[in-house]
Length: 155
Length: 155
Image (cartoon, rainbow over all chains, first blue to last red; front, top):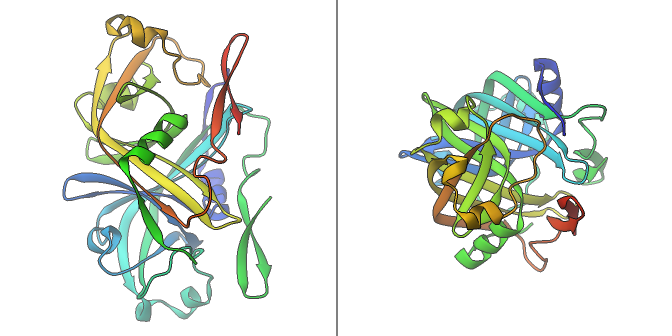
């Protein structure tokens, strides 16, 4: 058995920028909602794509948002979790900067029409891991650039 | 690209009973908290072990609790997520029934002293998946019984 170890901000940020998938938690109409999302990190913000009418579109703007990412190795009994905390901001596509447009968006797994961008500029990064002596980025999907755009693969 | 498909309650329950790891979300002092947890399902409740003084010990009793589990295949671009929703109940070890005591607890990864049990009796199960034509339980860790107790392995 191991002990819980806090991750420092640098390590949290490294993991947040390396990963591509997490869960956004917010409170909507008094209900806690936890939504799986693909995301990308750009500057000090996480970007998530959604479409008009979704929970994120309706409730994320100005709301407390928490993104949780983790990776667990059940066989070895270790893992880590990082939480990015801040407030959501809805950014219409036409208001995104050139740099933001140039950055690859999150993997698009679901066919959808119009796009709304939710930006979570993190105000607090915390994380912890169980156990030590292993590379915390092992097992994370990575981006491999192929013709047609970036494709997630596996380390 | 695929479409989002809602999972029915039966499928949500099957996945919830098959998995062993998820994230508990709750609001504590106005802050949304998302905590990675090992859990077990017994009857119509999820059980999580914690210790005195933790966030769960202090805030879970009577609070709105959401457990989210998911599994994602980044290479194939598909995945699923299930959310169990209800209210937390702190159960002192001596108040657990004989049947509950007989049920194996969640994997214990962290060395801790006293035990507090948090029970989440689900009131609502919802889930969704992206894409079809694959076994949604593939890739889930499974329990293999070995001398010394259950050990999580991999399907």
